[in-house]
Each structure stands twice: as C-alpha cells, then as structure tokens.
Length: 265
Image 1 (tube, rainbow, N blue to C red):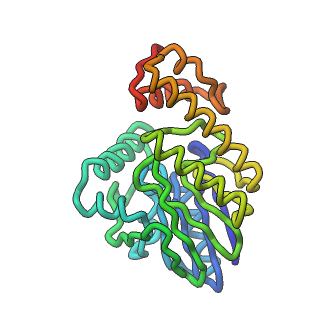
Image 2: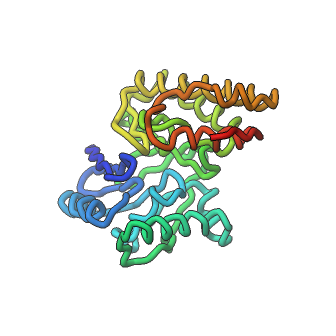
Image 3: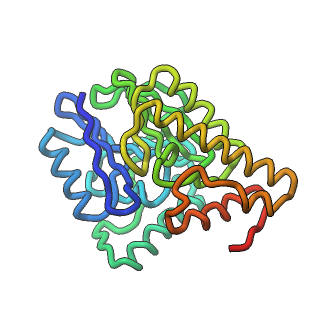
C-alpha cells in the first residue's frame, strides 16, 4: 500500500491518498484549486478514485470532493444524517466555505455543496475500500461528526483535527474531547505506529501521544476552572503549544466559553 500526503497552503491542512493496486481512497481533499488539481493528477497517475473520506464536516476539509465527481464519500453517520436532514450545522459548514472563498477570491467552479453520495461508516466498523482494510472510529469533541480511520495493515491513524502540532484544541464539547484523547492514547500505546493529523506533519506514535497528554492537561485545567466559575484561572491556563501563533488566544477564549466562562482579550 502507498500513502501520499499533500499539505495545503492554508493551515497546513493535510490531504491523504491511500492507494493499492491502482485504486485510491482520498481523505479530506483540500483546499485551493491548484492544490486539488495536484491531488487529482496524483490519483490519475496511480489509477482511479474508489472513494473519498471526510474526517469531519468543517469546510476546510470537505470542499475538494468535487474534483472526484460521482465518487462515493465516506463520513461518520452523524454528518450523513445532518446533511440528509438539511441541518443548520451542515448548512453553516458550507456557508463558512462560501464566505472564505469570497473573501479571498478563491474560484470554486462546482459551487459549495455536499456530495450527492454520502456513506456513513458506523462506529468501530471495519470495511475494505480499494482493497484497503479500514477501521472507523467516532472521534467527537472537536465536532460531533468526527471520523478517525485506522489503516490496519500499516498501523496508520488519520485523526482529522486532533493531535495537531500546529494548534491548540478547538473544542466544542470538553468531556467528549477528553474521552476521544483517552481513546487515542490507548491506540497509540498499541496498534498505531504513525499518525496523520488534519493539520501539520506526520507524527510518530510517541510524538502524537505527547500531544494528546499535553492536550488532556490543558482540557483538565480548563474544565476545572469552568467547574469553579473561575475566569481568572481559565485565562491563565497555559496553552499546550502554538502560543505564538496569531489567533490561538482567541481560540482559547472560545474554549473558555464552552465551559461557561467569558474572558477578556
């Protein structure tokens, strides 16, 4: 099996092509048209696209599906259901993509839409796609529709927006995020040898585990401050990394709001 990882010019967003015997699974194709053309050219050079997979529904991970028309798209059932129902969350993901593209003059010839064919992968389901054995994981906390994929023969884990060395956790549900990190730590201590995060470089299991432990510490301190209603303590929580990256303090404030605290800039 072959693994090709492409890195976007926006936020080091990763797109992964898993291939075997000329058949490909493309995970989170992103983001700019020239980058998507390069991914599509690589797939054509290998053979054909059998499936696309989204690790979650956030706009920076899903807009590239149109470069592979009529290809089934694998997602977590939470996202498949949200799209089928016309849920406000699914609509907001597309609105966010539309707003970003408009702001930065990004052409999107196929528009901003969901794929016509979404196939939900049940939690802990094992399936074979393009001859590749995949184990699907539900990874909530960053978003409710988080889908992790283990490529079992390679000990490779694709985790979407977890375990990134480039950013702090972006949290929607603290308890769910903590549970996801604990599950990932168990996997990293066992079958997983390499991780591809949604943003940033490929990681060894040891490096990914160190990020998971740092993120757990951050979230535990954040949750404790929230439980005590202590905005001062929440503001003082040390970021696990990327403290010098513009915007991370804003994301920390967003995380504080999740635990019910408002902190000043």
